[in-house]
Length: 383
View 1: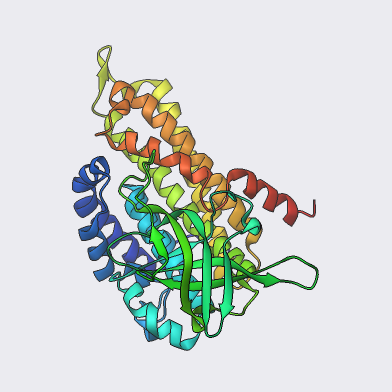
View 2 (view 1 turned 90 degrees about the horizontal axis):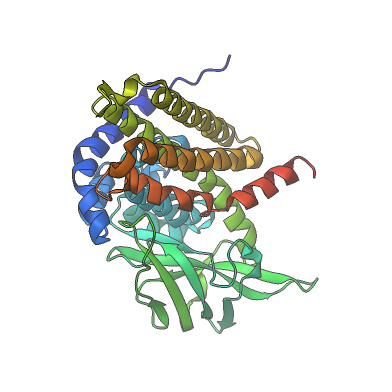
């Protein structure tokens, strides 16, 4: 029997994050967003709540939960704000999980405890200025010189890479060539403050304005050989695995944004009057909101399915791509419809739906564009 009801533990988590989002995030996040300021107090609270350690075992300072728990938290946060949600998603999925999945015992014990409590953030340096979706075209290089890696190159659009609590960035780099002439790509941990590692000024972004995003450069940056993450030459396979997990998390975030649009429109439709009636009495508005709810519900089922397959240890690459594609479409469509329902007020930055509209587009781009998701789905179908 198929049962989508949450367990008592998952429901308790969902409720606690919902309360935090409504009471702590919603009243203040607009000001952070407008100032393009990273919300350190909110991140610290999420750390104390254990959100950054949800899928990390207690042995390394985490909560000992599962990846689905992280997804539930992301959905509830994104119903109110995506900047806070993506800070958590990137901090766990791209910061902690590479160490947790592929790190040595020493690396896990060195980095994970502070990541799991939100005292520190990690970042994942994959995308390059000239690469985009073609992650295999990595140009950053790392040459082994004695007992040190010497790294040269640059990375673009890296989340959580320049905060006051960022402790390291894990970067993909070409460390040699395979017998067939192809690139040998490995993954290396670069601690913040390492000489030769420069964090550029923050980007001016369309959305996610209360999150941290920078371009990074490496100029003869030296780190110990022991900072190699996992097996040499397995970096490409490692980040593909991390991105597949991450797509389920991003799907949950997209569902949260889509549902947040429904929440705001239901409230507004019950308050706003036009031509002598509440606008929620008009069928045109009712149908638009009904379509919005349908999109959010369908997308939620998609990421629930992908997460369930992941937790059962079954193949889920196709389902993760479907969930990410469906949820990003839902988020974008719902944000557009919500802005239309709000009319002129939807074009004002102080309203949540204006933030939703600005935040939705990146979901069709980050952690694999919609085109990449279609390509992955087609491949899984044997095409």
